[in-house]
Image 1 (spheres, one colour):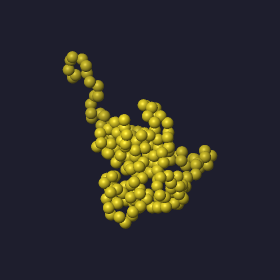
Image 2: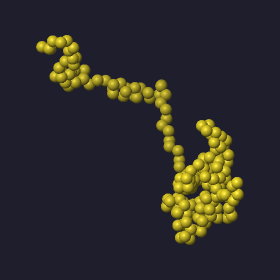
Image 3: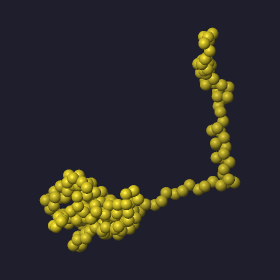
Image 4: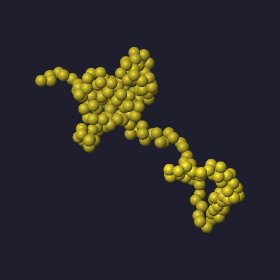
Length: 190
């Protein structure tokens, strides 16, 4: 019986499991959404929520060190404390959601998406923040309008020069090189 036994082994040693969770936490905080198997998502959610809760203590150096010990990337720690945790300032918990996707085609493992709860709002706000104007397209030239100049330029580029027409340098190089065929007869070529 498994009374009071917490956590899933996921078919890995403890060191492998810890490395797996570190990598997945880093990807989760970088992209704010990951696709993984359902058991991994269920194990990862409490770890990620604890990190976000520690991230709410913005001025606390021990909290930053605690998060750094779990994630091992200073960029991710900075993002947790500066961007992610302030978004959840008023929320007491439940920062992540798990959405089931169904079985994976290869092995039938149940797949799930682990994502931030406010991810849709952030994604919708990003395009408004960008104030980029689209590039202007060049007008298309129709066959009857101004196409004659373009055609003339193309013909000029295709015309061979006089040196090439007379067999300039390229022909001399071929003559100097000698015969290109190798003789296969047993007698020596004279």
